[in-house]
Amino acid sequence: MGRIMAIDYGKKRVGVAVTDTLQLIATRLDTVDADLIWKFLDEYFAKEVVDLVLVGYPVQLNNQPSEALRYINPFVQKFRQKYEKEIRLVDERFSSKMAFQSMIDAGLRKSQRQNKGTIDGVSATILLQSYLEQKKYI
Image 1: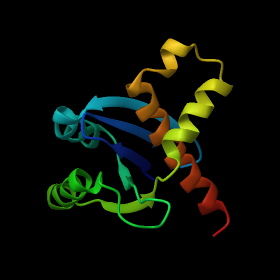
Image 2: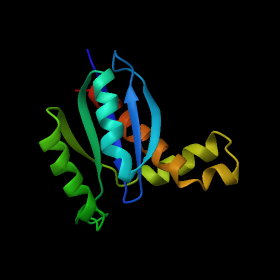
Image 3: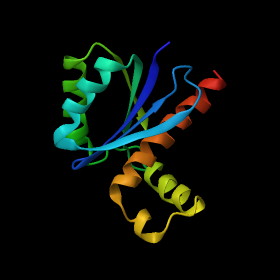
Image 4: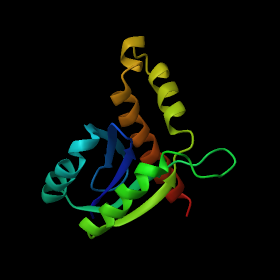
């Protein structure tokens, strides 16, 4: 069984999280500059089996597309062309707020909570953990 990967794609940074090989636990993997994401993914997929990739898909509270889709949609399209991997778009509406609250709850200092890279990585982890929780009940 391969891993599940979650990607929180941003214009500047990309948060990446993965499961263990049993697909039970979500762990923050890294935060990568958006310019380097393809190299990062090439290297990761060369050494690890990934069965499914989740990409955070932001919509507004009224279910209208977010402005961020301008750069997320091209990423998803290129991903589908480049890799033969199952990809699913998942609602990430509150993942950044949940990530920030999780960092407070974990006792991270204010300077650590202001690091956008940390927030992106934690957001990807929350996205993945939420998916795993939903999967338990299906």
